[in-house]
Image 1 (cartoon, rainbow, N blue to C red):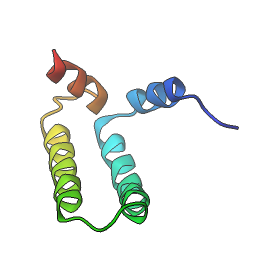
Image 2: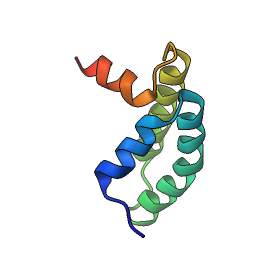
Image 3: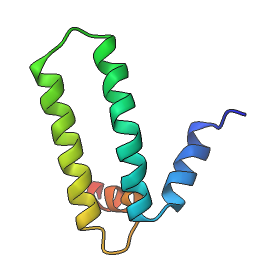
Image 4: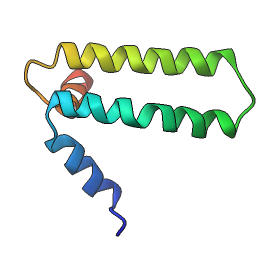
Amino acid sequence: MAASLKEVEAMVGALGPSDQVRLLEFLLPRLTEAVMSGAPAQVDAVAAWQEFRRVGERLAATSNGQSITQSVTDMRR
């Protein structure tokens, strides 16, 4: 059964901050492999993923009990 993007977003939004971080830890190696296998090796891509991880860690550390999705939404406002 496939879930729509909205359904996945709702499921991720319902996770607590620590579970969202665990989900990112699970997905990042797979996303990195998928992105890097379709493109030539680039130093900038590696730096971008490192920055992505750093931002995720910062969000998890400063979420004040909010989900990461809510923290990101608040940061955009």
